[in-house]
Length: 246
Image 1 (tube, rainbow, N blue to C red):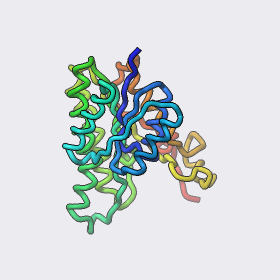
Image 2: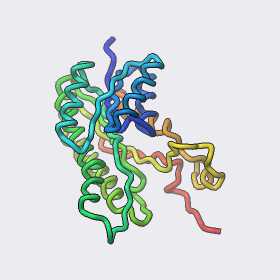
Image 3: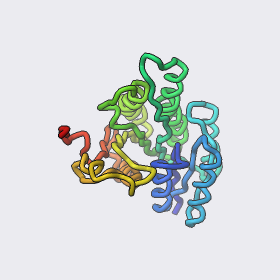
Image 4: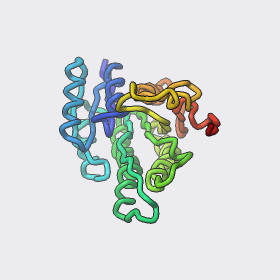
């Protein structure tokens, strides 16, 4: 039986790395796409050392030629693109009275523009093989904010609109498109978290990258193709818990 293939952008570390490993453990061919060459190669070698099938393609998602190359390399290696996880993004925050247009455009071109053009280029191949699935990683910051997050919030909010628009456009190709909104996902040192960090969540804990990986796998599974154009908040209930300062 032919293996399915997943492309994970921003897969060199953090959530992307966990998503890549989870899909690999489910017998997927994994394409690690990232603009960080050394970390991307390291992640790919890590997956291979575990016995998984993976390749690395250096990719800046803000550049269309590099996205076109990503799809060509994937097809050349594995013959199909079955799942695309649009995870790559910049977490940059600036005083709104100081942010330059260059910095604004850098965040939007990576976080939002990159999602659209990666999806478009992938669908060109998905439609030839009977369809596929796209999962866009947004953020609960699309729904709530802290100061100085305008560019980031705009990019993540834009992903929500883009998700249902692409779901409508790509439905004729049998491609589902959904978004995941992660909350607090600790990717550096989980053991350094304080009890007060965990208590901000209805779940009683801060999230882990694997929480997002499992959600990605659920939304991209063919048996769940009735789910499209929607958004799934994965935040341990943090955005639903009322918190009062003592």
